[in-house]
Structure formats: structure tokens, C-alpha cells
Image (cartoon, rainbow, N blue to C red; front, side):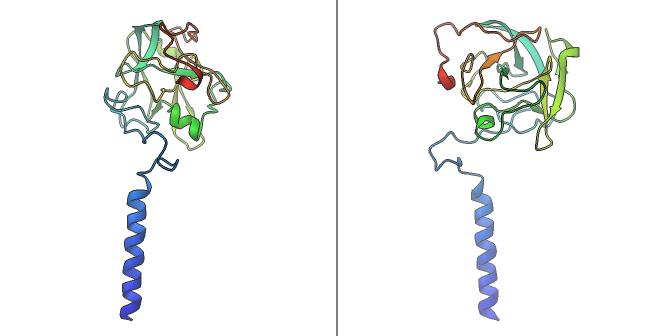
Length: 188
């Protein structure tokens, strides 16, 4: 009886340790980027990369002037992208794609910030049941290498069988290249 109880305690300890450390890896043998942290109520903080975790509060989309002209950003000034491989409002970016290009997720309805047309804002359901913010019927994403407000490193990137562009306030894709050529294949 004592041996059975010790075995059960060991099994529980191993299961608990696996559960605690299971989310700490990168899923790629430790060679990929570390998982991103949870965003704030209006988007990720300036020091944390964006994630695909729904915001705990409202999500605001704004228009701001950037290196490519006026473009859509979150409440922290992070650029928002569209993906040419998406089919209308339906996202096609999942798995590794969503790790590099986290969707802008929301609980509830997104709000229109300065320079944004409220009638163009919406949401669409993702496969897991979460709600992704859309603008002019296009799902919105971050790029994991955009670290600070104003970064547009993903602009024009050919990645995951499509091309990624920032959006203007009218919902149009902005196709101008980044000044200085900081974007490249796969956003590198």
C-alpha cells in the first residue's frame, strides 16, 4: 500500500511539473522565438511583442502617420497588417503562421480610435472560437518582429504563401516599400 501511494505521489508530481514547464518551450527544440506575452487592454506594451491571446478589455484601432503614410495601429501604436492569402473575412493564418503573425484578437467589440471609420471595424470567428478584429472585411495581424510603435518590418513580406501589408485608414493595402528596405522575404 505504501509503495502504491508513493508511486501515485510521484506520478502527480511528474504530471504537475510537465504541465508547469510544458508552456515554457518554443515548440521548436529551443531554436525559435520565445512565446510572446499577453497584451494590455488596448494592445501589447511597448516592451512585449504582440501575441494571439485575446485582450482582457476593449481593443482600439487607430490611424497614425508612419514611414509609409497613414496606417492602422493598435492602442500602443503597433502596426496592423492584412494577409493576401486570407479569403475575405476568413483567416488562413494558423499554427506557425500565427506565431509569426499573431492575429489581433478581442473579447467583445473593437472600438474605432482616431482616424478610423467605425463602420469598417468588425470581427470574424477563428477556428478555435476566438474573435479576430477585421477592418474593411480583412482580418488584422501583428508582425512578431515589430517591437516598437512605428515598426513596419513585415511590410511587403512574402511569407506563408501570401504577402503582408499594412492598411491605410480607408481599408486599402499600402504597397509602398519600407524606406531603407528594412523588410524582406519572410519579414527578415
